[in-house]
Amino acid sequence: MLASSANWAPSYSAAISSFARSQCRRLTPLASRRLFSSTRCAFTDDSQQRPKSVAILGGGITGLSAAWYMTKFAPAVPVTVFEKSSRLGGWLRSKRVEYDGGSVLFEEGPRTLRSWSIPGLATIDMIRQLRLENELGYVSQTSPASQNRFIYYADRLNKLPIDVRSAIPTLFRHPLLRGSVAKSLLEPFRESRPDELKDETVGSFFSRRFSPKIAQNVISAVLHGIYAGDVDRLSAKSLFPAFWKFEDFYGSIFRGMIDNNRLAQEQDVAIQHELVPHNNEFIRERLAKSSVYFFKNGIETLSLALTKELEKSPNVTIKTSSDVSGLRYSPQNSQLPFEIRGTAQKFSHVISTLFAPVTNSLLPENLRIPALAEIEAVTVQVVNLYFRSDNILPVEGFGYLLPKSLPEAANPHKALGVIFDSCSLKQHTDTGTSVTVMFGGHYWNGRTSYPSDVEAVEMARDLLRQHLNVTDAPLATNVALNKNCIPQYYVGHDERIDQARDALKKNFGGRLSVAGNSYAGVGVNVCVNSARNTVKGMLKDGDFTGLEGLGSELRWVKRQ
Ligand SMILES: C=Cc1c2[nH]c(c1C)Cc1[nH]c(c(CCC(=O)O)c1C)Cc1[nH]c(c(C)c1CCC(=O)O)Cc1[nH]c(c(C)c1C=C)C2
Image (cartoon, rainbow, N blue to C red; front, side, top):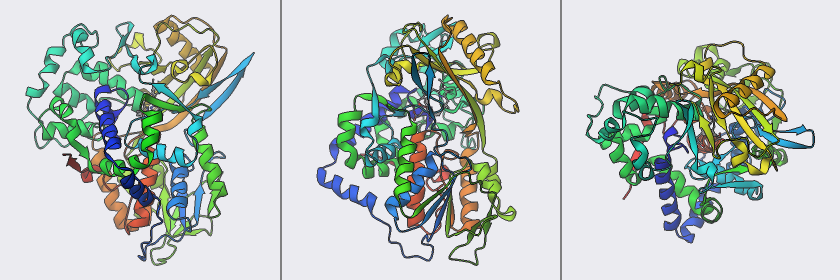
Protein backbone atom coordinates (compact mmCIF):
# COMPACT_ATOMS: atom_id res chain seq x y z
CA MET A 1 0.00 0.00 0.00
CA LEU A 2 2.60 2.49 0.96
CA ALA A 3 5.08 4.23 -1.17
CA SER A 4 7.64 3.92 1.57
CA SER A 5 7.70 0.17 1.14
CA ALA A 6 8.54 0.40 -2.54
CA ASN A 7 11.79 -0.64 -4.13
CA TRP A 8 13.06 2.86 -3.68
CA ALA A 9 13.22 2.72 0.09
CA PRO A 10 15.53 -0.26 0.42
CA SER A 11 16.02 -0.43 4.16
CA TYR A 12 12.30 -0.27 4.83
CA SER A 13 11.42 -2.90 2.28
CA ALA A 14 14.26 -5.03 3.64
CA ALA A 15 12.62 -4.88 7.04
CA ILE A 16 9.35 -6.04 5.54
CA SER A 17 11.16 -8.79 3.68
CA SER A 18 12.83 -10.02 6.79
CA PHE A 19 9.48 -10.10 8.54
CA ALA A 20 7.94 -12.08 5.71
CA ARG A 21 10.89 -14.43 5.79
CA SER A 22 10.63 -14.93 9.50
CA GLN A 23 6.93 -15.66 9.09
CA CYS A 24 7.71 -18.27 6.46
CA ARG A 25 10.05 -20.02 8.78
CA ARG A 26 7.76 -19.85 11.77
CA LEU A 27 4.69 -21.58 10.35
CA THR A 28 4.38 -25.33 10.49
CA PRO A 29 3.04 -27.41 7.58
CA LEU A 30 -0.08 -28.23 9.60
CA ALA A 31 -0.85 -24.58 10.26
CA SER A 32 -0.15 -23.98 6.61
CA ARG A 33 -2.74 -26.53 5.46
CA ARG A 34 -5.35 -25.24 7.86
CA LEU A 35 -4.92 -21.64 6.80
CA PHE A 36 -4.76 -22.51 3.14
CA SER A 37 -8.10 -24.29 3.26
CA SER A 38 -9.65 -21.32 5.02
CA THR A 39 -8.89 -19.11 2.03
CA ARG A 40 -10.75 -21.34 -0.32
CA CYS A 41 -14.00 -22.06 1.44
CA ALA A 42 -17.20 -20.72 -0.10
CA PHE A 43 -18.86 -18.36 2.32
CA THR A 44 -22.04 -19.64 3.87
CA ASP A 45 -23.37 -16.50 5.48
CA ASP A 46 -27.15 -16.78 5.43
CA SER A 47 -28.07 -13.14 5.88
CA GLN A 48 -30.67 -11.38 3.74
CA GLN A 49 -27.83 -9.56 2.07
CA ARG A 50 -26.26 -12.66 0.55
CA PRO A 51 -25.29 -11.93 -3.07
CA LYS A 52 -27.61 -13.41 -5.68
CA SER A 53 -26.02 -11.89 -8.73
CA VAL A 54 -23.08 -9.53 -8.89
CA ALA A 55 -22.15 -6.88 -11.45
CA ILE A 56 -18.47 -5.99 -11.62
CA LEU A 57 -17.77 -2.64 -13.25
CA GLY A 58 -14.45 -2.55 -15.08
CA GLY A 59 -12.46 -5.29 -16.81
CA GLY A 60 -8.99 -4.14 -15.77
CA ILE A 61 -6.79 -6.16 -13.45
CA THR A 62 -8.98 -5.33 -10.42
CA GLY A 63 -12.25 -6.23 -12.16
CA LEU A 64 -10.90 -9.48 -13.59
CA SER A 65 -9.41 -10.39 -10.23
CA ALA A 66 -12.70 -9.64 -8.46
CA ALA A 67 -14.57 -11.89 -10.91
CA TRP A 68 -11.98 -14.62 -10.44
CA TYR A 69 -12.20 -14.42 -6.64
CA MET A 70 -15.98 -14.72 -6.97
CA THR A 71 -15.45 -17.99 -8.84
CA LYS A 72 -13.20 -19.17 -6.00
CA PHE A 73 -15.18 -18.00 -2.97
CA ALA A 74 -18.79 -18.14 -4.25
CA PRO A 75 -18.81 -20.19 -7.46
CA ALA A 76 -22.61 -20.52 -7.52
CA VAL A 77 -23.25 -16.78 -7.68
CA PRO A 78 -23.70 -15.40 -11.22
CA VAL A 79 -21.24 -12.62 -12.05
CA THR A 80 -21.26 -10.18 -14.97
CA VAL A 81 -18.19 -8.08 -15.80
CA PHE A 82 -18.88 -4.84 -17.71
CA GLU A 83 -15.95 -3.37 -19.62
CA LYS A 84 -16.26 -0.22 -21.70
CA SER A 85 -13.50 -1.00 -24.20
CA SER A 86 -13.22 -3.95 -26.53
CA ARG A 87 -10.24 -5.34 -24.64
CA LEU A 88 -9.72 -6.57 -21.10
CA GLY A 89 -6.74 -6.02 -18.80
CA GLY A 90 -6.81 -2.22 -18.41
CA TRP A 91 -3.35 -0.77 -17.88
CA LEU A 92 -1.68 -4.17 -18.28
CA ARG A 93 -0.64 -3.86 -21.88
CA SER A 94 2.25 -5.75 -23.44
CA LYS A 95 2.96 -5.15 -27.09
CA ARG A 96 5.31 -7.00 -29.43
CA VAL A 97 6.71 -4.60 -32.05
CA GLU A 98 8.45 -5.87 -35.18
CA TYR A 99 11.56 -4.27 -36.60
CA ASP A 100 13.71 -5.16 -39.53
CA GLY A 101 15.26 -8.45 -38.41
CA GLY A 102 13.33 -9.21 -35.24
CA SER A 103 10.84 -8.09 -32.64
CA VAL A 104 10.85 -6.62 -29.16
CA LEU A 105 8.31 -6.82 -26.35
CA PHE A 106 7.30 -3.48 -24.85
CA GLU A 107 5.29 -2.81 -21.71
CA GLU A 108 3.00 0.22 -21.85
CA GLY A 109 2.27 0.28 -18.12
CA PRO A 110 3.51 -1.72 -15.16
CA ARG A 111 6.17 -4.29 -15.98
CA THR A 112 7.53 -5.81 -12.80
CA LEU A 113 6.07 -6.99 -9.52
CA ARG A 114 7.83 -6.82 -6.21
CA SER A 115 8.86 -10.24 -4.93
CA TRP A 116 8.45 -9.14 -1.33
CA SER A 117 5.43 -7.09 -0.46
CA ILE A 118 2.47 -7.88 1.70
CA PRO A 119 -0.29 -7.14 -0.84
CA GLY A 120 1.92 -8.99 -3.34
CA LEU A 121 1.12 -12.25 -1.57
CA ALA A 122 -2.33 -12.19 -3.17
CA THR A 123 -0.78 -11.90 -6.65
CA ILE A 124 1.67 -14.70 -5.94
CA ASP A 125 -1.14 -16.93 -4.71
CA MET A 126 -3.19 -16.09 -7.80
CA ILE A 127 -0.27 -16.73 -10.19
CA ARG A 128 0.21 -20.14 -8.61
CA GLN A 129 -3.44 -21.04 -8.80
CA LEU A 130 -3.42 -20.01 -12.47
CA ARG A 131 -0.34 -22.21 -12.93
CA LEU A 132 1.71 -19.37 -14.39
CA GLU A 133 4.91 -20.06 -12.45
CA ASN A 134 6.82 -21.05 -15.58
CA GLU A 135 5.90 -17.76 -17.22
CA LEU A 136 7.91 -15.81 -14.67
CA GLY A 137 11.38 -14.34 -14.86
CA TYR A 138 13.22 -13.04 -11.81
CA VAL A 139 15.54 -10.10 -11.22
CA SER A 140 18.15 -11.21 -8.72
CA GLN A 141 18.75 -9.02 -5.66
CA THR A 142 22.43 -8.89 -6.58
CA SER A 143 21.93 -7.86 -10.23
CA PRO A 144 22.71 -4.31 -11.39
CA ALA A 145 18.99 -3.76 -12.01
CA SER A 146 18.36 -4.27 -8.29
CA GLN A 147 21.48 -2.62 -6.95
CA ASN A 148 21.80 0.42 -9.16
CA ARG A 149 19.08 3.02 -8.95
CA PHE A 150 19.83 6.56 -9.97
CA ILE A 151 18.49 10.06 -9.62
CA TYR A 152 19.47 12.58 -12.27
CA TYR A 153 20.64 15.72 -10.52
CA ALA A 154 23.28 18.37 -11.12
CA ASP A 155 23.86 17.15 -14.70
CA ARG A 156 24.63 13.55 -13.80
CA LEU A 157 23.26 10.24 -12.62
CA ASN A 158 23.62 9.86 -8.85
CA LYS A 159 23.45 6.35 -7.48
CA LEU A 160 21.11 5.83 -4.56
CA PRO A 161 22.59 3.88 -1.67
CA ILE A 162 21.02 0.45 -1.30
CA ASP A 163 21.18 0.47 2.47
CA VAL A 164 21.94 2.99 5.17
CA ARG A 165 25.19 1.33 6.30
CA SER A 166 26.81 1.38 2.86
CA ALA A 167 25.66 4.96 2.46
CA ILE A 168 27.39 6.37 5.51
CA PRO A 169 30.92 6.91 4.06
CA THR A 170 29.61 8.86 1.09
CA LEU A 171 26.57 10.49 2.67
CA PHE A 172 28.16 13.85 3.44
CA ARG A 173 29.55 14.18 -0.09
CA HIS A 174 26.42 12.95 -1.85
CA PRO A 175 25.37 15.66 -4.33
CA LEU A 176 21.68 15.04 -3.63
CA LEU A 177 22.14 15.72 0.07
CA ARG A 178 24.98 18.21 0.24
CA GLY A 179 24.59 20.51 3.25
CA SER A 180 21.61 18.64 4.65
CA VAL A 181 23.03 15.45 6.13
CA ALA A 182 23.83 16.76 9.61
CA LYS A 183 20.36 18.27 9.88
CA SER A 184 18.77 14.99 8.78
CA LEU A 185 20.73 12.94 11.28
CA LEU A 186 19.19 15.00 14.07
CA GLU A 187 15.77 13.56 13.17
CA PRO A 188 15.42 11.43 16.33
CA PHE A 189 15.79 14.55 18.45
CA ARG A 190 13.24 16.63 16.61
CA GLU A 191 9.88 17.43 18.18
CA SER A 192 6.90 15.38 17.06
CA ARG A 193 4.11 17.03 15.08
CA PRO A 194 1.47 18.92 17.02
CA ASP A 195 -1.79 17.03 17.71
CA GLU A 196 -3.79 19.35 15.53
CA LEU A 197 -1.78 18.43 12.41
CA LYS A 198 -3.99 15.76 10.87
CA ASP A 199 -2.16 15.38 7.54
CA GLU A 200 0.40 17.25 5.47
CA THR A 201 2.16 16.98 2.13
CA VAL A 202 4.97 14.47 1.75
CA GLY A 203 7.25 17.43 0.96
CA SER A 204 6.43 19.21 4.19
CA PHE A 205 6.67 16.00 6.25
CA PHE A 206 10.16 15.05 4.98
CA SER A 207 11.35 18.66 5.18
CA ARG A 208 10.17 18.86 8.77
CA ARG A 209 11.61 15.51 9.88
CA PHE A 210 14.78 15.46 7.73
CA SER A 211 15.51 18.35 5.39
CA PRO A 212 14.00 20.13 2.39
CA LYS A 213 16.81 18.73 0.22
CA ILE A 214 15.79 15.15 1.00
CA ALA A 215 12.17 16.04 0.22
CA GLN A 216 12.83 17.86 -3.03
CA ASN A 217 15.86 15.99 -4.43
CA VAL A 218 15.13 12.42 -3.33
CA ILE A 219 11.54 11.89 -2.25
CA SER A 220 10.07 13.95 -5.10
CA ALA A 221 11.90 11.66 -7.54
CA VAL A 222 10.74 8.51 -5.74
CA LEU A 223 7.15 9.75 -5.94
CA HIS A 224 7.59 10.36 -9.66
CA GLY A 225 8.53 6.69 -10.03
CA ILE A 226 5.50 5.42 -8.15
CA TYR A 227 2.68 7.97 -8.37
CA ALA A 228 3.99 10.24 -11.13
CA GLY A 229 2.84 12.68 -8.47
CA ASP A 230 3.74 15.94 -6.79
CA VAL A 231 5.67 15.80 -3.51
CA ASP A 232 4.03 19.12 -2.58
CA ARG A 233 0.47 17.79 -2.88
CA LEU A 234 0.54 14.08 -2.05
CA SER A 235 -0.44 13.08 1.48
CA ALA A 236 2.25 11.96 3.91
CA LYS A 237 -0.31 10.17 6.04
CA SER A 238 -1.69 8.12 3.14
CA LEU A 239 1.54 7.42 1.27
CA PHE A 240 3.81 6.84 4.24
CA PRO A 241 1.46 5.53 6.93
CA ALA A 242 4.27 3.67 8.68
CA PHE A 243 6.48 6.76 8.89
CA TRP A 244 3.49 8.84 9.98
CA LYS A 245 2.79 6.29 12.71
CA PHE A 246 6.45 6.11 13.73
CA GLU A 247 6.51 9.84 14.41
CA ASP A 248 3.48 9.38 16.62
CA PHE A 249 4.53 6.21 18.36
CA TYR A 250 8.31 6.49 18.65
CA GLY A 251 8.68 10.24 18.22
CA SER A 252 11.05 9.51 15.34
CA ILE A 253 11.13 7.77 11.97
CA PHE A 254 14.69 6.51 12.51
CA ARG A 255 13.71 4.95 15.82
CA GLY A 256 10.63 3.43 14.26
CA MET A 257 12.67 1.95 11.41
CA ILE A 258 15.10 0.37 13.82
CA ASP A 259 12.22 -1.18 15.76
CA ASN A 260 10.13 -1.73 12.63
CA ASN A 261 9.65 -5.46 13.02
CA ARG A 262 7.55 -4.82 16.08
CA LEU A 263 4.88 -2.57 14.59
CA ALA A 264 2.66 -3.80 11.78
CA GLN A 265 -0.66 -3.04 10.17
CA GLU A 266 -3.28 -5.39 11.52
CA GLN A 267 -4.60 -6.28 8.09
CA ASP A 268 -1.08 -7.03 6.82
CA VAL A 269 -0.55 -9.51 9.60
CA ALA A 270 -3.85 -11.15 8.68
CA ILE A 271 -2.91 -11.48 5.00
CA GLN A 272 0.47 -12.89 5.91
CA HIS A 273 -1.07 -15.50 8.15
CA GLU A 274 -3.54 -16.44 5.46
CA LEU A 275 -1.31 -16.51 2.41
CA VAL A 276 2.32 -17.03 3.38
CA PRO A 277 1.93 -20.62 4.58
CA HIS A 278 0.42 -21.94 1.39
CA ASN A 279 3.01 -20.19 -0.76
CA ASN A 280 5.89 -20.69 1.62
CA GLU A 281 7.92 -23.05 -0.53
CA PHE A 282 7.46 -21.05 -3.70
CA ILE A 283 8.46 -17.84 -1.93
CA ARG A 284 11.53 -19.47 -0.43
CA GLU A 285 12.66 -21.32 -3.52
CA ARG A 286 11.76 -18.97 -6.34
CA LEU A 287 11.27 -15.46 -4.99
CA ALA A 288 13.63 -15.25 -2.04
CA LYS A 289 16.70 -14.15 -3.97
CA SER A 290 14.92 -11.75 -6.31
CA SER A 291 13.87 -8.15 -5.81
CA VAL A 292 11.18 -8.17 -8.51
CA TYR A 293 9.73 -10.66 -10.95
CA PHE A 294 8.11 -10.25 -14.35
CA PHE A 295 6.29 -12.20 -17.04
CA LYS A 296 8.59 -13.45 -19.81
CA ASN A 297 5.85 -12.86 -22.37
CA GLY A 298 4.66 -9.60 -20.89
CA ILE A 299 2.60 -8.63 -17.87
CA GLU A 300 -0.58 -9.01 -19.94
CA THR A 301 -0.03 -12.77 -19.49
CA LEU A 302 -1.75 -12.32 -16.13
CA SER A 303 -4.92 -10.63 -17.42
CA LEU A 304 -5.10 -13.03 -20.40
CA ALA A 305 -4.87 -16.03 -18.07
CA LEU A 306 -7.56 -14.60 -15.81
CA THR A 307 -9.80 -13.97 -18.81
CA LYS A 308 -9.30 -17.52 -20.03
CA GLU A 309 -10.23 -18.93 -16.62
CA LEU A 310 -13.29 -16.69 -16.38
CA GLU A 311 -14.44 -17.72 -19.85
CA LYS A 312 -14.43 -21.33 -18.64
CA SER A 313 -16.61 -20.48 -15.62
CA PRO A 314 -20.29 -21.19 -16.27
CA ASN A 315 -21.45 -18.44 -13.91
CA VAL A 316 -19.34 -15.63 -15.34
CA THR A 317 -20.43 -13.41 -18.24
CA ILE A 318 -17.96 -10.90 -19.65
CA LYS A 319 -19.40 -8.00 -21.58
CA THR A 320 -16.78 -6.02 -23.46
CA SER A 321 -17.58 -2.82 -25.42
CA SER A 322 -20.24 -2.35 -22.80
CA ASP A 323 -20.31 1.18 -21.48
CA VAL A 324 -22.39 1.38 -18.32
CA SER A 325 -24.06 4.79 -18.45
CA GLY A 326 -25.53 4.69 -14.95
CA LEU A 327 -26.92 2.62 -12.11
CA ARG A 328 -30.51 2.64 -10.88
CA TYR A 329 -30.95 1.72 -7.24
CA SER A 330 -34.27 0.61 -5.77
CA PRO A 331 -33.71 -0.51 -2.16
CA GLN A 332 -37.36 -1.59 -1.92
CA ASN A 333 -36.45 -4.40 -4.31
CA SER A 334 -34.35 -6.07 -1.66
CA GLN A 335 -33.45 -9.05 -3.84
CA LEU A 336 -32.14 -7.21 -6.90
CA PRO A 337 -31.94 -3.49 -6.12
CA PHE A 338 -29.47 -2.49 -8.87
CA GLU A 339 -30.31 -2.08 -12.52
CA ILE A 340 -27.82 -1.11 -15.21
CA ARG A 341 -29.37 1.97 -16.85
CA GLY A 342 -30.71 1.35 -20.34
CA THR A 343 -30.84 -2.43 -19.86
CA ALA A 344 -33.17 -4.72 -18.00
CA GLN A 345 -30.27 -6.33 -16.14
CA LYS A 346 -30.69 -6.43 -12.39
CA PHE A 347 -28.19 -7.32 -9.67
CA SER A 348 -28.20 -7.85 -5.93
CA HIS A 349 -24.70 -6.37 -5.59
CA VAL A 350 -22.31 -4.19 -7.56
CA ILE A 351 -18.53 -4.04 -7.18
CA SER A 352 -17.08 -1.00 -8.92
CA THR A 353 -13.41 -1.21 -9.81
CA LEU A 354 -13.57 2.01 -11.84
CA PHE A 355 -11.69 5.21 -11.01
CA ALA A 356 -13.53 6.73 -8.00
CA PRO A 357 -14.98 9.80 -9.78
CA VAL A 358 -16.28 7.55 -12.59
CA THR A 359 -17.97 5.29 -10.03
CA ASN A 360 -19.54 8.37 -8.49
CA SER A 361 -20.79 9.67 -11.85
CA LEU A 362 -22.73 6.41 -12.39
CA LEU A 363 -24.67 6.72 -9.14
CA PRO A 364 -28.22 8.12 -8.99
CA GLU A 365 -27.87 11.87 -8.48
CA ASN A 366 -29.35 11.92 -4.98
CA LEU A 367 -26.94 9.20 -3.84
CA ARG A 368 -23.70 10.62 -5.19
CA ILE A 369 -20.64 10.75 -2.93
CA PRO A 370 -18.58 13.96 -3.17
CA ALA A 371 -15.54 12.32 -1.51
CA LEU A 372 -15.31 9.87 -4.45
CA ALA A 373 -15.55 12.71 -6.96
CA GLU A 374 -12.69 14.59 -5.27
CA ILE A 375 -10.04 11.93 -5.93
CA GLU A 376 -7.86 13.06 -8.85
CA ALA A 377 -5.55 11.19 -11.22
CA VAL A 378 -2.61 11.97 -13.50
CA THR A 379 -1.83 11.10 -17.10
CA VAL A 380 1.46 9.45 -18.04
CA GLN A 381 2.86 9.22 -21.55
CA VAL A 382 5.01 6.11 -21.91
CA VAL A 383 7.59 5.99 -24.70
CA ASN A 384 9.35 2.67 -25.38
CA LEU A 385 12.48 2.68 -27.51
CA TYR A 386 14.58 -0.20 -28.77
CA PHE A 387 18.15 0.23 -30.04
CA ARG A 388 20.23 -2.31 -31.93
CA SER A 389 23.40 -1.73 -29.92
CA ASP A 390 23.94 -3.57 -26.64
CA ASN A 391 26.03 -0.94 -24.97
CA ILE A 392 24.62 2.52 -25.50
CA LEU A 393 23.82 3.15 -21.83
CA PRO A 394 26.61 4.62 -19.66
CA VAL A 395 25.64 2.45 -16.66
CA GLU A 396 23.74 -0.71 -15.89
CA GLY A 397 20.80 -0.48 -13.53
CA PHE A 398 17.07 -0.09 -13.01
CA GLY A 399 17.09 3.33 -14.63
CA TYR A 400 16.80 6.81 -13.21
CA LEU A 401 14.26 9.23 -11.82
CA LEU A 402 14.06 12.97 -12.22
CA PRO A 403 13.35 15.03 -9.09
CA LYS A 404 11.00 18.01 -9.04
CA SER A 405 13.92 20.24 -8.04
CA LEU A 406 15.57 20.00 -11.48
CA PRO A 407 15.72 23.32 -13.31
CA GLU A 408 13.63 23.65 -16.50
CA ALA A 409 16.75 23.42 -18.69
CA ALA A 410 17.64 19.99 -17.28
CA ASN A 411 14.15 18.61 -17.87
CA PRO A 412 12.49 20.69 -20.57
CA HIS A 413 9.96 18.02 -21.60
CA LYS A 414 8.75 17.24 -18.07
CA ALA A 415 10.02 13.69 -17.91
CA LEU A 416 9.50 11.69 -14.72
CA GLY A 417 12.01 8.94 -15.22
CA VAL A 418 13.72 6.48 -17.53
CA ILE A 419 13.67 2.69 -17.14
CA PHE A 420 16.50 0.55 -18.51
CA ASP A 421 14.22 -2.35 -19.46
CA SER A 422 16.90 -4.45 -21.11
CA CYS A 423 18.74 -4.57 -17.78
CA SER A 424 15.87 -6.12 -15.86
CA LEU A 425 13.51 -7.61 -18.45
CA LYS A 426 16.22 -9.52 -20.29
CA GLN A 427 13.82 -12.05 -21.76
CA HIS A 428 11.85 -9.35 -23.57
CA THR A 429 14.56 -8.95 -26.17
CA ASP A 430 17.52 -11.14 -27.13
CA THR A 431 20.03 -8.41 -27.87
CA GLY A 432 20.07 -4.64 -28.08
CA THR A 433 18.94 -2.03 -25.57
CA SER A 434 15.40 -1.30 -24.57
CA VAL A 435 14.43 1.75 -22.51
CA THR A 436 11.19 3.42 -21.46
CA VAL A 437 10.86 7.16 -20.92
CA MET A 438 7.86 8.42 -18.93
CA PHE A 439 6.49 11.96 -19.28
CA GLY A 440 3.77 14.02 -17.69
CA GLY A 441 2.22 12.97 -14.42
CA HIS A 442 1.49 15.94 -12.15
CA TYR A 443 3.38 18.25 -14.52
CA TRP A 444 0.51 17.84 -16.97
CA ASN A 445 -2.35 18.50 -14.54
CA GLY A 446 -4.98 20.61 -16.25
CA ARG A 447 -3.64 19.90 -19.74
CA THR A 448 -6.18 19.03 -22.40
CA SER A 449 -3.87 18.23 -25.31
CA TYR A 450 -0.81 16.03 -25.32
CA PRO A 451 2.23 15.43 -27.53
CA SER A 452 1.58 13.30 -30.60
CA ASP A 453 3.35 9.94 -30.83
CA VAL A 454 5.97 11.42 -33.16
CA GLU A 455 6.57 14.36 -30.83
CA ALA A 456 6.79 12.04 -27.82
CA VAL A 457 9.50 9.92 -29.49
CA GLU A 458 11.44 13.09 -30.34
CA MET A 459 11.12 14.28 -26.72
CA ALA A 460 12.43 10.92 -25.48
CA ARG A 461 15.38 10.95 -27.89
CA ASP A 462 16.16 14.52 -26.87
CA LEU A 463 16.23 13.52 -23.23
CA LEU A 464 18.44 10.47 -23.81
CA ARG A 465 20.84 12.65 -25.82
CA GLN A 466 20.96 15.33 -23.13
CA HIS A 467 21.22 13.06 -20.08
CA LEU A 468 23.03 9.97 -21.37
CA ASN A 469 24.64 11.10 -24.58
CA VAL A 470 22.69 8.46 -26.52
CA THR A 471 22.58 9.57 -30.15
CA ASP A 472 21.63 6.29 -31.89
CA ALA A 473 18.35 6.13 -33.77
CA PRO A 474 15.92 3.58 -32.32
CA LEU A 475 15.00 0.53 -34.41
CA ALA A 476 11.55 0.29 -32.89
CA THR A 477 9.38 2.64 -30.84
CA ASN A 478 5.98 2.62 -29.22
CA VAL A 479 3.98 5.37 -27.48
CA ALA A 480 1.05 5.02 -25.07
CA LEU A 481 -0.85 7.92 -23.59
CA ASN A 482 -2.26 6.53 -20.34
CA LYS A 483 -4.92 9.07 -19.44
CA ASN A 484 -5.78 9.31 -15.74
CA CYS A 485 -3.86 6.10 -15.07
CA ILE A 486 -2.58 6.86 -11.56
CA PRO A 487 -4.94 8.18 -8.87
CA GLN A 488 -3.39 10.76 -6.56
CA TYR A 489 -3.79 10.61 -2.81
CA TYR A 490 -3.60 14.28 -1.99
CA VAL A 491 -3.59 15.69 1.55
CA GLY A 492 -6.87 14.72 3.23
CA HIS A 493 -7.14 11.41 1.31
CA ASP A 494 -7.71 9.42 4.51
CA GLU A 495 -10.57 11.70 5.45
CA ARG A 496 -12.11 11.30 2.00
CA ILE A 497 -11.86 7.52 2.41
CA ASP A 498 -13.72 7.78 5.73
CA GLN A 499 -16.41 9.95 4.18
CA ALA A 500 -16.75 7.62 1.18
CA ARG A 501 -17.04 4.55 3.42
CA ASP A 502 -19.72 6.18 5.58
CA ALA A 503 -21.69 7.35 2.55
CA LEU A 504 -21.45 3.98 0.77
CA LYS A 505 -22.78 2.30 3.92
CA LYS A 506 -25.55 4.82 4.41
CA ASN A 507 -26.65 5.06 0.78
CA PHE A 508 -26.29 1.46 -0.33
CA GLY A 509 -26.07 -0.65 2.85
CA GLY A 510 -23.41 -2.99 1.52
CA ARG A 511 -24.91 -3.51 -1.92
CA LEU A 512 -22.29 -1.35 -3.62
CA SER A 513 -18.63 -1.87 -2.79
CA VAL A 514 -15.45 -0.57 -4.39
CA ALA A 515 -11.97 -1.88 -5.18
CA GLY A 516 -8.95 -0.77 -7.19
CA ASN A 517 -6.23 1.83 -7.24
CA SER A 518 -8.30 4.86 -6.18
CA TYR A 519 -8.12 3.98 -2.50
CA ALA A 520 -5.23 2.11 -0.93
CA GLY A 521 -2.33 2.01 -3.36
CA VAL A 522 -1.62 2.12 -7.07
CA GLY A 523 0.30 -1.00 -8.03
CA VAL A 524 -0.85 -4.25 -9.59
CA ASN A 525 -0.30 -6.06 -6.30
CA VAL A 526 -2.54 -3.65 -4.46
CA CYS A 527 -5.25 -3.97 -7.13
CA VAL A 528 -5.30 -7.77 -6.89
CA ASN A 529 -5.27 -7.64 -3.10
CA SER A 530 -8.03 -5.05 -3.01
CA ALA A 531 -10.21 -7.20 -5.32
CA ARG A 532 -9.66 -10.13 -2.99
CA ASN A 533 -10.53 -8.12 0.13
CA THR A 534 -13.63 -6.63 -1.41
CA VAL A 535 -15.00 -9.94 -2.65
CA LYS A 536 -14.30 -11.65 0.66
CA GLY A 537 -15.75 -8.75 2.63
CA MET A 538 -18.87 -8.51 0.49
CA LEU A 539 -19.56 -12.22 0.85
CA LYS A 540 -19.03 -12.19 4.57
CA ASP A 541 -20.36 -8.93 5.83
CA GLY A 542 -23.78 -7.33 5.34
CA ASP A 543 -22.69 -3.74 4.87
CA PHE A 544 -19.20 -4.04 3.46
CA THR A 545 -17.91 -1.18 1.27
CA GLY A 546 -14.34 -2.18 0.31
CA LEU A 547 -12.92 0.68 2.37
CA GLU A 548 -12.82 -1.12 5.72
CA GLY A 549 -9.47 -0.99 7.46
CA LEU A 550 -8.46 2.16 5.56
CA GLY A 551 -8.33 5.82 6.63
CA SER A 552 -9.09 6.17 10.32
CA GLU A 553 -9.77 2.42 10.51
CA LEU A 554 -6.13 1.58 9.84
CA ARG A 555 -5.02 -0.40 12.89
CA TRP A 556 -1.50 -1.11 14.10
CA VAL A 557 -0.47 -4.05 16.18
CA LYS A 558 2.66 -4.65 18.12
CA ARG A 559 4.41 -7.89 17.37
CA GLN A 560 6.11 -9.85 20.10
C1 LIG B 1 2.68 3.75 -15.89
C2 LIG B 1 3.65 3.93 -15.04
C3 LIG B 1 3.66 3.69 -13.59
C4 LIG B 1 4.28 4.55 -12.69
N1 LIG B 1 4.12 4.08 -11.44
C5 LIG B 1 3.39 2.94 -11.47
C6 LIG B 1 3.07 2.67 -12.82
C7 LIG B 1 2.28 1.51 -13.28
C8 LIG B 1 3.04 2.15 -10.28
C9 LIG B 1 4.22 1.79 -9.47
N2 LIG B 1 5.53 1.86 -9.84
C10 LIG B 1 6.31 1.42 -8.82
C11 LIG B 1 5.51 1.09 -7.74
C12 LIG B 1 6.08 0.66 -6.41
C13 LIG B 1 5.52 -0.44 -5.74
C14 LIG B 1 5.63 -1.76 -6.44
O1 LIG B 1 4.71 -2.54 -6.25
O2 LIG B 1 6.64 -2.04 -7.10
C15 LIG B 1 4.20 1.30 -8.14
C16 LIG B 1 2.95 1.10 -7.32
C17 LIG B 1 7.77 1.32 -8.81
C18 LIG B 1 8.31 1.36 -10.16
N3 LIG B 1 8.53 2.51 -10.82
C19 LIG B 1 8.99 2.23 -12.06
C20 LIG B 1 9.05 0.81 -12.20
C21 LIG B 1 9.51 0.08 -13.40
C22 LIG B 1 8.62 0.27 -11.00
C23 LIG B 1 8.47 -1.16 -10.66
C24 LIG B 1 7.02 -1.55 -10.80
C25 LIG B 1 6.46 -1.41 -12.22
O3 LIG B 1 6.86 -2.13 -13.11
O4 LIG B 1 5.62 -0.51 -12.41
C26 LIG B 1 9.34 3.23 -13.06
C27 LIG B 1 8.36 4.32 -13.21
N4 LIG B 1 7.04 4.25 -12.95
C28 LIG B 1 6.45 5.45 -13.19
C29 LIG B 1 7.44 6.33 -13.62
C30 LIG B 1 7.21 7.76 -13.99
C31 LIG B 1 8.63 5.64 -13.64
C32 LIG B 1 9.90 6.18 -14.06
C33 LIG B 1 11.05 5.61 -14.10
C34 LIG B 1 5.03 5.75 -13.01
